[in-house]
Image (cartoon, rainbow, N blue to C red; front, side):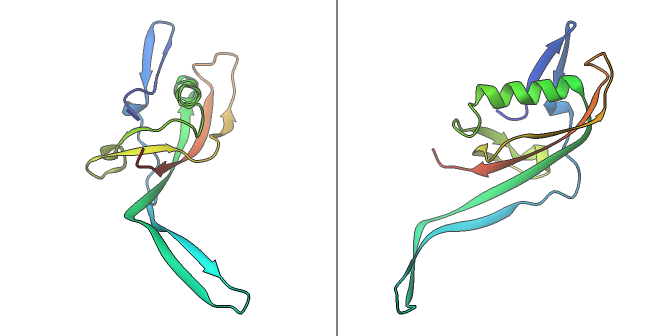
Length: 134
């Protein structure tokens, strides 16, 4: 479950992303999946693939310490990038419920402040989660 299972253990200290909320001002995008057929004459026909709405949640974490970055990268690798789906606790973004999601695209990591000690390095991270029904 995201964010509870996103943890890293560095120097016997456990860092959990459940303790680190994403930046405020995030958006939740909703859309219906549909198939569009367009003929040569310009006639267009649309058919819904599903009556269920799919949500896309872009998240940004600004100025996080190195252990949180490591935890998120390890979780991304455990989910095989965009392959595996997992549960997402919506209370992490101020809503209620649990939905099934997968990563959509890569995790973007930007170095803000770097030191020789990975625990004190600071990063900004952005990622996108897409709802799935598998």
